[in-house]
Image (cartoon, rainbow, N blue to C red; front, top):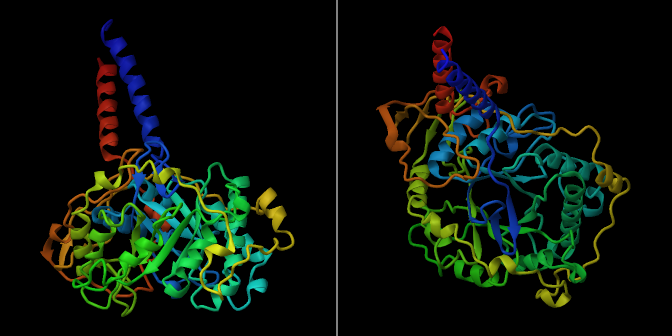
Length: 497
């Protein structure tokens, strides 16, 4: 017993440490903007967005007073995170969010598998976005309160990659003459709110429509420093482009106009990426543009892209996955084709830093940056609406602050089928170490399906599984749990001795 007792004490302390470790929610490293690159704030590795647009239900499924949004149901997020992890995704873009809902479990699930979140602060609901036809009326304190509430809901998650202050607000040549100062104003307000009310800096940017007549001017107007001030809060931190110009397997770098985009953004001082891409004029989509986007012709300028979209909406032919009203899902051939393209990528090369790109600074705003005569060329921005400065200084009333929670389940509950009809067995997420983001890993998800079967239920892009979030108290590290149980058993044996 003189020998056993010290061993017992050591094992007891080890077990306590094991239990403590299991109780903590592992976290990805926050990503920061450094010049024209995204950079891991701890490792210093360059971060390239390998993303997908994630909006189960589409914009029509987001309603006033709704009790769900894409990040509010744990079971749904677990299923989709498992499929995205196999696909190789490291970023999701979510368009419509209700900041009053609980997003802790979903955000924690995506965090656990190394997937970051790019979030729109606007929505299609009334007074929840800028109206290009009524700019001064729509830019008001109630609207800003809504945008700040989204920040509050997601500011504490380390996998929050950034916020979009606007999405395609400029879609016509005339809108280029009036909208830009308001986009800068909203960006300014969001960044000032983050600076006052968040523990870390979170990037804010804009997602532009691919309207070539105003695209270069939109980028120039939003990304310069007013007065040459490097602390100008109205300058966007990143620029996203929704581009669908590469269509089908016969498209090339030149025929798609990608060469023109690379030239247009060649002097960028902030990260530029495709905030949507994936033309569907030729079906099934083969995604040849992936090799161009992540290849040597573009990676010096671009920071990746976000495929549109994860869920197949009724007859839109953009989806990677079919969802059914009973919670089951099936992969489309587009998922398989995209996975094959991702599996060809050289991830080590993509993560290699570019020291010159990280040291770039933005140009000073000037009318000489603007080429089109009808585009806005003055940089006087709208003043804050009455009461908005108090919101920025003191924070909004009763914010719904999200927080990481422990993910205690890993196995997907709903049946999921490959594009070949076979059910995918043992589908689960695999939590990653703290410093890892998800990467393509050579998997063939449909190929892992077993017996041929057909998913039941009605296919719909507007009605994903409506299971209880409480039922999905998710995921921990099963290996760690097994070690803990083994240690506990050994302690009991020692105590008996």
